[in-house]
Length: 104
Image (cartoon, rainbow, N blue to C red; front, side, top):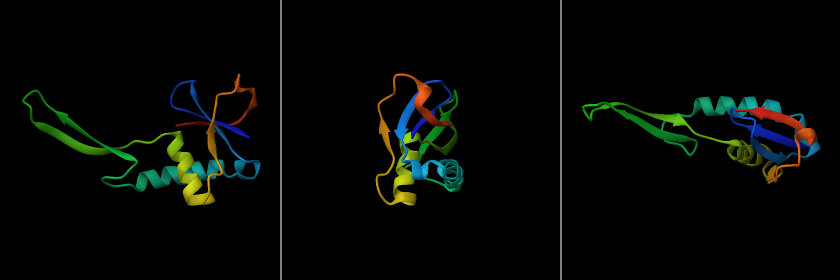
């Protein structure tokens, strides 16, 4: 099955998902989201951001979550499948073959 992951735009990335895993994608998406919410501090899925005011003083510095569709697929492959079962594929000619859609 083909899955499309988009980020606030109609464009996106496409992934091959074996049929036996297609029904679990939504549950895994929720679990991945919960995992992201549990991250604190420096982590591969975070990025440090800071704001400097007009007096060149630090207003705040925080770690924000930074991830994409490939990160979600890597998480599934490592944490759930323990192998490379889902992978990115070239965009199909149109979205008629897309069976799963996720918007992050």
